[in-house]
Length: 235
Image (cartoon, rainbow, N blue to C red; front, side, top):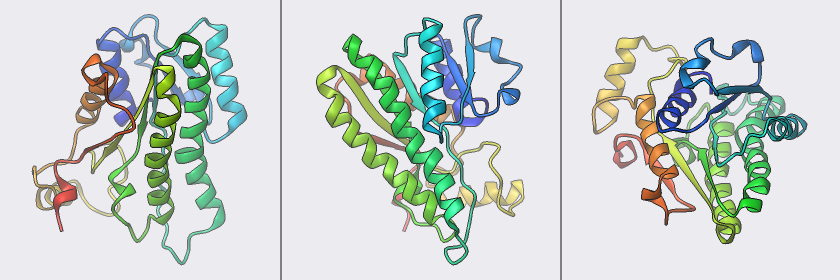
């Protein structure tokens, strides 16, 4: 939650009146601007690729009297690797954070939400769930798993008043590596490959998150909203 899409979603939620808690695996990397999210904003360190740290994180929130009404599973990593070079450690690291972390954070939150009969979970997937990448078999698989897990969670938790949806961003203008392209090349690529002619901005993703946590989406669950400027329409 300390940068990019995660920070933008945190800002949007805070500006809408939510008390925000952001997570990052290294406490030293929490932004000094945390107070911008409100005087009661919190940061809790945990590596969501490790179940014991997830459980400790939620136990800490319980101890602080924090009620988790909304969970946004945004953590994700993408170390690119050619298919013939992809090793087990890299595969496991990506799936631990992107897929296992998403499920077990959702499980921990849902166990608490069930007691109150309400809750809202948003999982950040990716267009890579549907679009293959030569250097991203592990990442694409993890994000396709997020879409599938979202549906299963939504089906299991609907009777408890808990909605579960996913957002699948396309190319987004964050601090992610440009993979050998200059900024100008990246902008040109976006103009030529995205029907709406630009990369998404983090607040485009945050806007979808606000819709999903609001009463405007009160009858929406198990869905994946693709926020990509129409790129999935391209051949």
